[in-house]
Length: 480
Picture 1 (cartoon, one colour):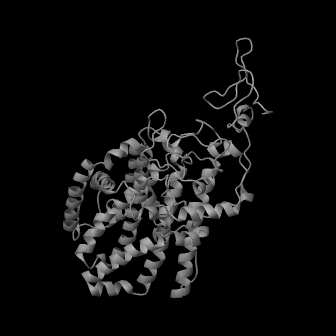
Picture 2 (tube, one colour):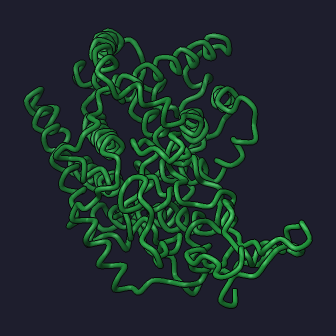
Picture 3 (cartoon, one colour):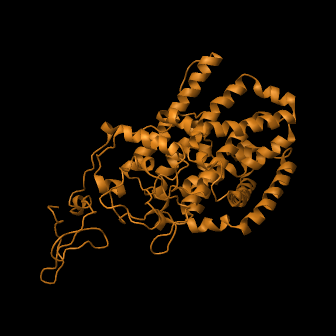
């Protein structure tokens, strides 16, 4: 299955069936390739562990708690790599849609949010000329990026900074960011006679979200050490409005959307499940309808700069106290609309569920198309055509999102969007001095000790028979 930043990559490979044991003598692939070789159990899935608990416990089924090497490296060691041919066959199989272990709710939400991103970028060039488009733009901006940041945070709850996780951050966030920054620079040089320049400190189009997500996930372990992390992140977000951050590294958006990511980190699966029932859907539609009416009223009166999160109090012309009040009100409004949106997301498989697994592809690729249309004057034609042209543009935006999310696109472009980490760059794991348990943590666990009263305890480590009433560390049978 294609990995992308909107997919939960930090969960363990699912078993053959919920609650079923893995086949004997088999081990999961290494941590860097695990998401490509088997479907993952989503953090919002309905699987429940043996103890009946959900949430993070569901994600850690079959993994020894506290294993410093992670489920993959504990099974095979840190340097064992799969064959390249098997890698490509697995990718093609999952690109064809065999994703039985995935949660359709998450894939549906990912696709719909990326679709809103594409539509918003198609509406933005003509929004100032039409009140209806401006109202739709205000409504979408009030919740779609907060919802996307929240979803990414929720799916980053298992990120601890392990080497395999850090490698995925480099190959699936930082590398695509640099690749598409170069692509935008090359397109401007080829078609508009501008000097070729790659400016990684000034993100182009939607690439800023990759940079922000890279920083957000790097700091995910830090937020677990902070008391009241959501409130602290909200304070940091509001304080960013009183600084002159400029457009370097998209720092204003990175800081102002940060609370939504932290909120997602703190949300367990059971906290979101109530949004997936009929009662939630009953109130979600009236809430969004009321928000649409409010957006129609606010369209000629309120600037979109409030929702773009690029301008501070000085640019908006507000004193500190009113600015803080409006920002806090926007947090509350965004939270209500995000909940309403998630309540309307189908929890069952739909025709676009499989497209949600590769949501990063349309998220990144549509920017090249929109920028090309804008530079060639295509949106001027849309303004001249009026409402009918806007409807046509919207339909084309939906078709573009579905086209760019097809498995065939992923099979061709995966080296640019989700490249593999070169095996020769893998570092060797060095156990800490005095850590006697480190070598033991990588012993094979699928064979039970033979002979005597040796046994496997709950933690997965071999224990020899008692000697003189005292438990002493033992050796694994068969020469372990």
